[in-house]
Image 1 (cartoon, rainbow, N blue to C red):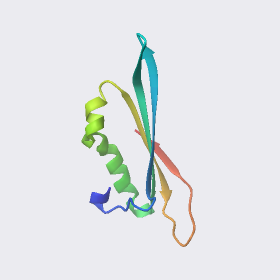
Image 2 (cartoon, rainbow, N blue to C red):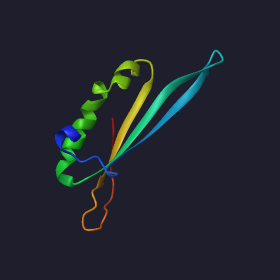
Image 3 (tube, rainbow, N blue to C red):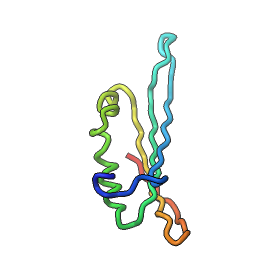
Image 4 (cartoon, one colour):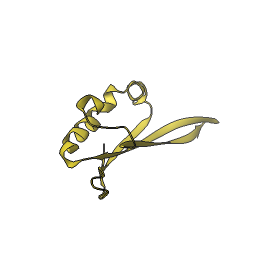
Length: 95
């Protein structure tokens, strides 16, 4: 998003990653990875965030390496950037 001039510093972008592991023949195996991004942005860059979210996975080396053997669930949530000390509601999306 920084390449498209969307601010991601100072808490504007936060991510949570969670994995699910199963046992296969007595060995722990990662089966699923859930990634959830929270992005605090103004409404005028919403379309840029959506475009980046829809395209970034195939540009990520880790995803490109593992997506055929591990199920990834990637989602994001838009939270309006604080303006004048107010914060707004959230809009959630997933891919």
